[in-house]
Length: 266
Image (cartoon, rainbow, N blue to C red):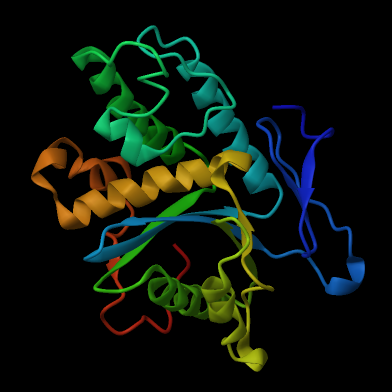
């Protein structure tokens, strides 16, 4: 990857999004579109055909992103000196592959299959990443789930919940979601918010997680939250990772129940 000042991804919202590690930043390039949001949410989903999950990170605008991005960059640098894996900064991390001990990070094309030690070390990367997030000042994590829901349905409920949080607080936010830009169903959730009580700004910013490291961090949160809910026997070692790493955070919220219409931000 190249430095932030050399490579940015612009989207049709009022910010510039850095795609590399280092000191992340945001700046207005369309002042007539209004002020920047007070908070940024980085979201990714996990789950299976029975249960959908979204995990998220929330940071204060500008300074919060920079702090979280720098902490995650330090975590990635530590992976580069792990003797049991071969990690390079341009490799996108996926929690589901790491805990399953698969993927090019552990089994490069033409190379030998990973050893038991390598698979164990790969799984620990997810726990190490969660612990890194737990130490970032000003960063909040959360997760929601619903049984028998599509990704789009769960996202719509999540957007409604987040909008209610910020309506109570009188603040605004922007949602950044792992995606390729074609997810029309996710945009629909934003456009269904009441115009006179809308605190989630614009459409979701849909960017592949490989371009924004904090979206990969959100994937870690989502997958650990998913396992805390579905508790697959083969993943028993990580059932309690979410709860133990974030002891002050509520358990993943079941949005199959009535959405909380008030309450503090996470």
